[in-house]
Image (cartoon, rainbow, N blue to C red; front, side, top):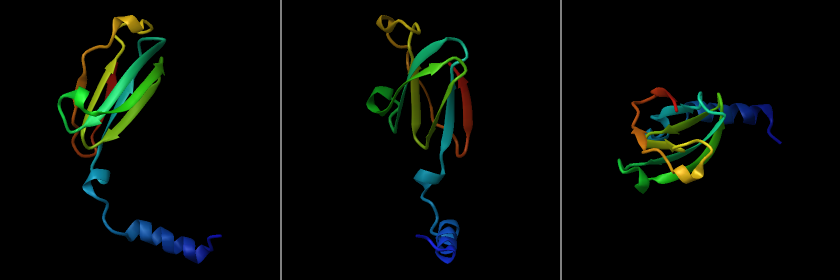
Length: 110
């Protein structure tokens, strides 16, 4: 059980504690939006390489119409979508990528 005095101490530590490291504080955000299709699969990878296939996969998500996927990182953010939404045999589009400035937010319509 947390008592009010303890809660206040924890809050003050969070607010006045050590500085947050650049890797966690200095990030940008890409917002991928599906405004065209009833549903589309999107793959995202994040890493240091400009060769997207070498970066770690964040995953594949299906975005319905008017849905968005926000991706936060201080590294290169790569994304691609299904070539023909709903037809897995058509493969993927080429990778798109960006590396954002500090606190930059980029809204991208797929």
